[in-house]
Length: 152
Image (cartoon, rainbow, N blue to C red):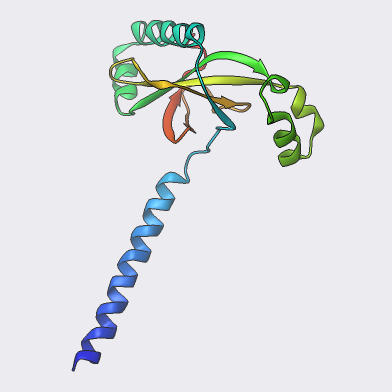
């Protein structure tokens, strides 16, 4: 009697876990992770990023504010740095892509802000070469954020 109930019950539990695992992985795979490296922001970078977010949020139209409020985070470009100035990144980029010209590109130092408060979520920034289009979603340091570029 126990074996008759055990196997169907086991099958149902495994099916629920499998379906739930597939559903959650589909949600996170919709957006690309643009993070190549992480680092602490210098005070001038953090200040510039804050100014850019403040100006961006101040000039939003009401319908755009509603759209932004549906997301938790904003990603803003604080500064640009050559790939060659990020320790160890040039070798990783050329190794991953096979293109040596990637090492001469500029990276973007991206900071993440809370979309509702306009305040930074931390003092870290994320190095990225590629970014989503402005207004698009991307993952930076585990945060799924609306990319606002330099806020202009």
